[in-house]
Length: 435
Image (cartoon, rainbow, N blue to C red; front, side, top):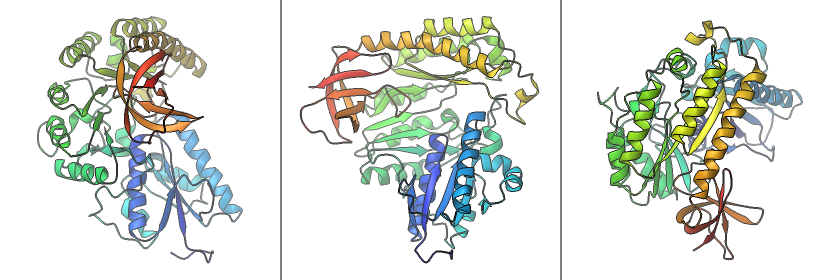
């Protein structure tokens, strides 16, 4: 592709939003590199001349961050510091026409499924044989693997199906091949992601096949940890837990967003489950996989939520004692069924409710961490910060969960596993010594 500069093009990919977006950026970068185009993620040297911004359109804060990032790079283009600015991802998929009108300085906008069209801007061809050939934006010892695209659920608050389309599963063979390729590059942990893991296989195999996928991934040589993110609770396939029990390298960890606990909120959110059913499910999971770490995500400030609903949610947390909890404040999304509801709770009140709920979880987290003091855990060394090594147990995913501060007089290798005896517990982190 010709530009004003005589230098060879260098592309910087900026990724906003979730791990699914990160995988899309990694795949895009792999395709560009395969076409002999110099590509980098989140370049801090600013020696690139082309930017591709992979946007998020999930909630208001994410939209704002995406818009600001676009405007910042358009400003650089106006100053002559960039030749091209391209925009892709969820925000672009959903608001392409509006964005083209409001920010005409962007050279082109693309949707979430338009990778070949992006490549055409560089006179590059999509190479279908490049399974797993990604420029990892993560450290080399772990990677995200997307097993499906889109979602068939109809949750009233969620615009993801509008941006990502209907559920489309990848084949087991392609996922296993990608895992093998990643392991050959030094990856030891893969995190399986999808908008909804438990639906996997229904479209192409006519039944839920996540258990079969797990059993095949678990025998990939060198794959030491397999982690599950984003499981839908209604009609949860318990066979997943059989695979977890059968293989030591499937982490005893499950990320299952529940969103709320008050039945009137669950009904309004179209979650297809009641509080009693959720409690039964959580108890059944814990009975089948003793010691499993359960992570959930909640929404506060949904239209119609009362103080009583908030109190019920707090009581639910105190009763169920989840290991990990994340929380979002409700964001009013166009074209979702909840958009017709009056969004009468102020942003400040939503934040206050979220803080109240997290204060409850903070106490639970400290209590659970204290139970680990004196015990030895297998820990994956992720990084070195301020002279100390930081890692994770199998019960913690990257960025969203606890970390383990590792005290070691010896030099450790990033990406190695070590045994750590926990000596201190904090609200959300642990500290321990090499055994």
